Image 1 (cartoon, rainbow over the protein chains, first blue to last red):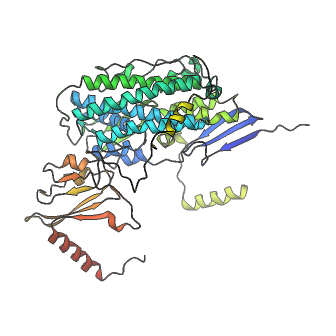
Image 2: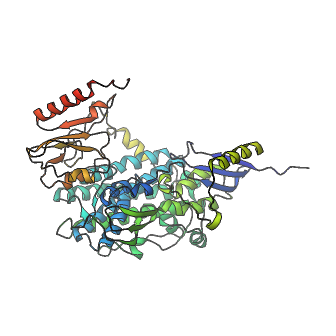
Image 3: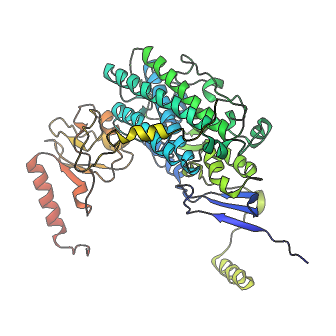
Length: 392
Length: 144
């Protein structure tokens, strides 16, 4: 009799395929993956709990550190929520600067992803050149804000710095070069035969599946889901500078490459428009240190998709509760489903196709099971422990 | 669109005739941008001791030591290694005593000591350091 045997290939938490810790188990039949599970939680940092011990301003910087790549959108989501609770709105110029930074950040994030995804596919040349060109936007961010990564642009009620005439020219010059390069990269990812062999038809997710798995951001848009917070619920300066939706019906990795690259062009267009129609005025507005009691939600479009904040204030200097749901978390379900039927060698590509960010995901969830709570004495706990290990 | 091989050969060949994109950092330095947020500097002459900078610091990187409140004698202890370079303190200061230097930004040392910087009038800093040395004289220091 042939025994039923199932081979499981464990990958992670430390592994060379992705640079962040996550544990994956792929059950395989020969080369083909028949099931996938993901386990997260290796980089849980207790940020939501930490928020309760800091005041609103300090929290801006704490939340900025949820993600090193999309740091600005996190601070923006928090600032927008806190401003809404306080009943104030940042001045139009501040809103425009926030939007400008968001779009510059999107460029830097998508360029980074392009490199990482190419690297996973073994296309090191594309990886190196796209990261070289990404330096242009990193330098722009540094020259605007003073920091390369965590720009700390936001204040509650405005922004810290202005965009001068000099920056205006610098940015226009920078994105002109980037636009040229992006055109080239779009051509590379859509015409390179070797690379197409790794992307075309791989990780196919239909529109129905994308809706079912709750995918967000470019991952969903690559399956034809017309969803973008910047369009559905415009915030900051997006009502004045509308975004054109970028979608693709392909649903495979190639479509994700196309969507993200075409989103770059949209960002370039938007940046030019913002710079040419920058509203004049103040950069900050006064916000009380104590934010009035209340609850609100705040949604922004991060480079990876919809970022959701729930903010609760009790009227003190510190927030009572801030709940964060990052876009990567929504996209994991799609990975574990889409992986089935593909070769094990395609797994790094499928994983990086959603542009995962591990440390943003990791939050603690306590599920309240109603009456199941019980209080044990030390002696009872000790006896339970002895019993538990005896049975093993 | 036509599918072909070696779509990036052109980039590679062009790069052969170009300068490297990287720089030999410690020997070759890029000029820093004007707004670079480097180390914090404090001007004691304008400080009123309101401590608003400390209140909003996300990483407890600054401490204001009050030597004499009436005579406005303060020493600012700045922990470079804790600082996140967010410039919130600079925004908070109403008297423009705080600034982020765009030239000094390198943080490399074999021990933690150089990361604690004292700012203030020379005599105040000397007084404070002497006092600290006196207070610690009786205790045995931590083994290195």
